[in-house]
Structures are given as structure tokens and as C-alpha cells.
Image 1: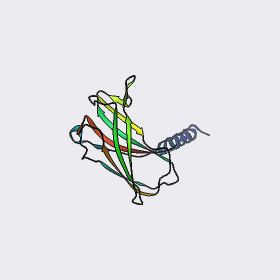
Image 2 (image 1 turned 90 degrees about the vertical axis):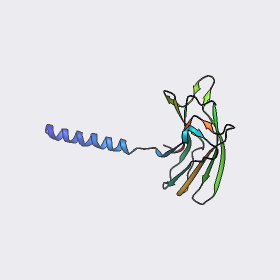
Image 3 (image 1 turned 135 degrees about the vertical axis):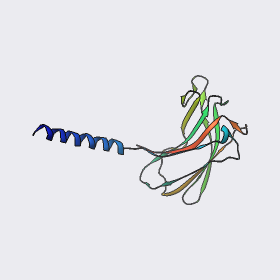
Image 4 (image 1 turned 30 degrees about the vertical axis):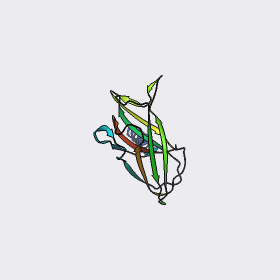
Length: 158
């Protein structure tokens, strides 16, 4: 085989490897809603809709929160309402741990902005159809200052 033939085969193999690597994706969905003026009022309830088609896979649902370093608390209480494709709604109060005395902020940070992706459900299957998530902050402070975004992430279990 000549040099061009070997180069062609190697190029095709490398391209196939790249295409295969690009197609491996565990994340299904993530959407974050900006909090007006970074002051989250209890009356502001971000809604996020997602359509699930793959019912054979297992998924984990995460709450996503982005805040400034000036946020005063180590946690965030959220009411998360999940409306299933059948129309049933389940509401869950979750206590998102954002910091500890030993480690400080637990999320990833850059400058004075920190982001947390905190698992709120165990791995499980979802029904096909449209889901709607409604987030409401349930802290004593109203409005809750220095919260920039809140959202939902749904990831396939690899």
C-alpha cells in the first residue's frame, strides 16, 4: 500500500474516532433562569419545561444555582414542583447545601460567582412527554439577595 493509501485510512479512522467521541453525550438538558436584579422574591417562580423522549435511559435531576460571593447563607431551601406528562404534580422541599465552615463554597467558582449543581433525585427512568419544573425559594429572607440564576439539569446515567 502506498503512502497516500495509509494516510487516507488513518485520516478516516481519526475522523470516525472524533465523530464517535462527539456523539457520546450524557447531558440531556440544562436550563437556567436569570433572577431579576439578583434578588429572588418568593413570588418569582421560574418555570422550566422539557420533553423526554428516551424512556429506556435512566436520569438524574439536579438543581442548578448560581450566586455571588456576597450570598449570606450556607444553604438554600427550594420548593421544586414537578409536573409529569400525566398532569400529576409532586412538590419537594429541598435543602441545598452550598457551603461548609471547613471548605467554604462547595460549587465551582470564578472570581465572585459560584455555581452549584446539586443532585435532587436518585437515578431513575422518566415517562415520555413534557415535564414542567417550578422553582420557588423558601428562605426567610424575601427577596433573597445575590442569587443570579436558578435552574434544572437532567443528565442521563452513563
